[in-house]
Image (cartoon, rainbow, N blue to C red):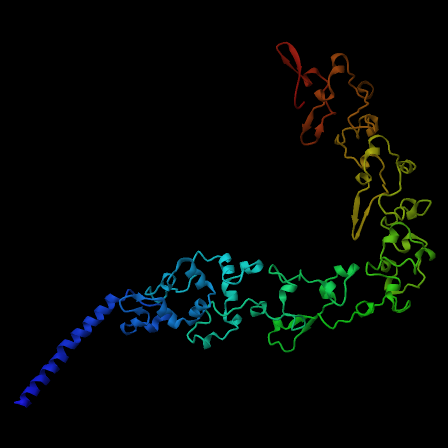
Length: 497
């Protein structure tokens, strides 16, 4: 009887396994699908499943900050130490983690995004104010594994070093490489600003061993501080650096070449000062005692302009201007009595303006009268270009009016007309002042009312195949050539003849 009872119980148990268990599993699967609001993000994918719910959720209460902070220990530490962005957000609105970092939104959902309320001013409120270039720098240019000095993995093994915002400090060298290779203190802000690294605007050379005076203040830093190569650097782009220490500066020749080749000794300051090589000490050197006293513009010249090669004791030619200066007129005045001496027109006070006066010009072959006197020199003496030469023209082959002026009458008076030169009608005072006797110089004397008619009533402006201007000849001499008949009266004809 006992055996029969046991067999019945065993059969019932097997039946339950075959029928009931699959039903239960089916119900569980459906229940899970109904309970979960969606897939977890990629970062929490390992927590998928009903058995892991309590790792984030309190039974009957949902997710809590305490559960989040059991895994996210770096966030918990910042909250405990009352520093960082999470402290600022909680203090402002008593937010929970899930307000900013919600879940069950799918595998591709981003859990970490900066809210619109996060500004550059917010960054300053959490410990590091963004100024200068830092205001336009992308977040991940600073927040990246290469700049994280702290061993975050030892505190929170699961931390994603690429995505985390923890681990940076506020020192310059936590993000920037040591540019000076230990030559100078690491207090970068003593010389540089956040606006730009170069130039070092806060650096004061007066606090260095070598004080900058005179022209030295305007010398580019790289002239003295040369570039060196760090043999220990494995990256070619960052191997070079500037030398700032152990630079010789006890004598001028430590940096400067002795252009006098030791003819005056090595004490440069005997004649020169840092205010400029041109300002030679008058106490020890007086050029006026030489064969060529310096006057005018010559006093402003750099010594090397004349004393080339640094040989100052060499006797130099100085009798003629052309010993040093090129003839910019290319021999145009060589036929003059003075053989084109520069000082006839110029002085050492300056090449321009020339000392050539109107009275001097009127001693030449072309005298200036009337409107010619008001013209600037360069209006007639224009720049000429011939191959590699460029100069102003002073010698003219044609000295007639047409040598400079265009024939405005298009050769109407140069063939057979009695008037053949400009001055027969015009004067030097103005082209508009015309001294022309129509009766004496033409075959059409002006009589009666014709004497009062303006010239351009008959000599009209034309533009045709042979002339563009005022027509003077040939003109018809018949009345009908100029006048139209209109109700018995005569009126001047306008337009072409």
